[in-house]
Image 1: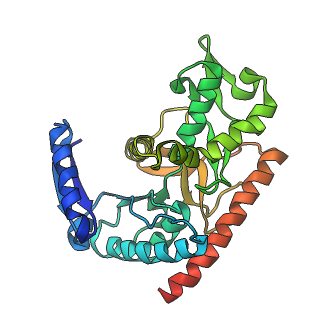
Image 2: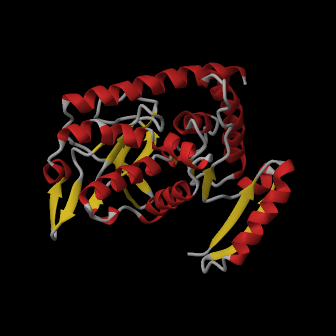
Length: 301
């Protein structure tokens, strides 16, 4: 399926964007039909099938989370309005720029004519990080691990859950807890490593995740477009309405989902233990607070 890539940036960055355009051309990618670089929203959002919103205001030193939310509400309100005005109503919108969950909710609220189920935010990077940590610990490849879950916010309160995850060992599928036989690692160091991996990458390379984030976006979009493999589920931030896991409605929260015909559904009926419940509630509380702050700014933006 050939792709036309439309790249939107702010006017002062158009020179840099031309460099990206040249590099994309030089990749000689088999599926890339055309690349359009623009600083105009009406050109960028016109008739889009998929919108990947990567740009956001990064957190600067000494910046309060509230200041960050305020700056981003402005950006995502305008992008939501542009999508509402120019994109196809069937557009799939993926928000990557942080705070991704709340930015995604802001964009959705600013695009009332696009179904809210069409908006999702990226927690696939966290999902992939969790998969990789389990694979490393067991000495298998990441492909041998499936059905890890990221619950909640794409922040350090997220809950990486492997209670329902499976790993292929010597040709048969085993539960991760059973395979590892190390509950204290799974409830301790594993959780904190995944939660804080983004910060660890920044500390090491002085820049945030690039290749792993791009790979996660590709995974996320591919699964929306082509569906999830039989017997497998993935994590993405979606609107919480109608979930059966006790997460309040009208939050953009990461859940385990399966996707078919470009439509996601919650994975139902997973038993939740007390340890998980506490972690799931904690991240929901953070998202509720973020949402309340953002909505104050949204009404005045």
